[in-house]
Length: 228
Image: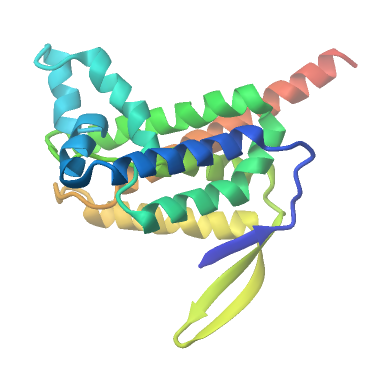
């Protein structure tokens, strides 16, 4: 299923969402400039779980490894990886930014990516494969959107064999199916020790976003009662 757009216009201009998309595109252009050195570039600036755990024993630099958690959020493994992530961020990011506010949204986005990367490392502690992509942070955005706007309708392209159907689906249903797919895929790949898609980063990001938005909404309600 491919979301095309939602029926949930934002009240304010999503300046942070647009800036994040711009930074991701810029980072990808820098990747393309690396030529034959691209793999080494991704190893240096991507998250490498084995290297992250080595930093706990002072074998590698902990500050440097923590920095790669954030730099990895702006790197991608190819055009499709970049376009898919930026498309989801474009559709769902504006409303979450509108709800949280610009500064909180940026902090939330980075925190989602941070949690997602650490959980991925925990599930792949010995991996030497660099992990890159904004997927964990964007999964946080999806989780927040699912909680804050469950009834928003998302126009979705559904391929059925050789035909395509466009259907308006409630956001909670669409994102719930997305999360279920991530969970099943993550469970099936558990213990494989191979590279590929960081399913558990997606799961962790989504759960973090859902919980964080819930806490934010609860705080807003509490402040509203206190100020009444």
